[in-house]
Length: 183
Image (tube, rainbow, N blue to C red; front, side):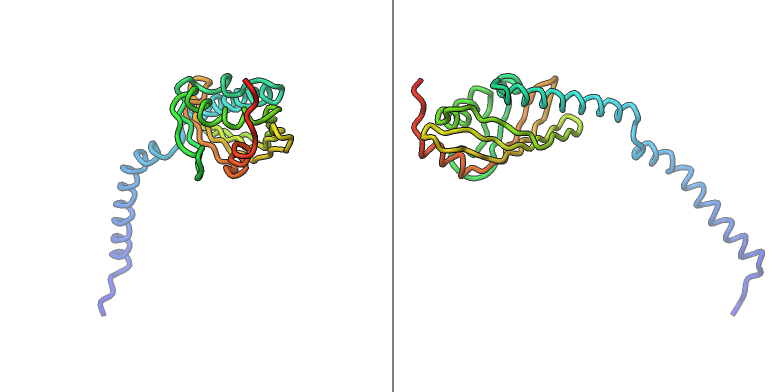
């Protein structure tokens, strides 16, 4: 068994260390540029997130006080998707289409507007997630209660895309078991 003298082993180790250092010197800066967060972007996101949370929160407060959350918050060309199965599930293109096909069938069978109780609002970039409960009284006098999670993509202070998760059975029971209010 040949044993390299200590200086030979050190020289080999030094070469390996030199090669590794050169490699890191070359890829280190490039890697740092792609993975290090840009402080300007983080600050921008924080401002956008704060603004979007405030816009959604204020719209829900106005809704709670009797206002119309949809007219206030949604862009005219909003794309709204209700997830799940049932007659109201699907994607609606435009505020008018959504209100006519999804909101009006329920609201016309309520004697009181749905009153939201916000549990939390979370924002990440242009996305806002709001979880809330809603309650109202149907035209037959029965209570309507539901749980909601809405996910919004915001642009210039308006919702341009929305996804809704709710108990569609509770929604459908109100539509099927209550007469619409007279217009």
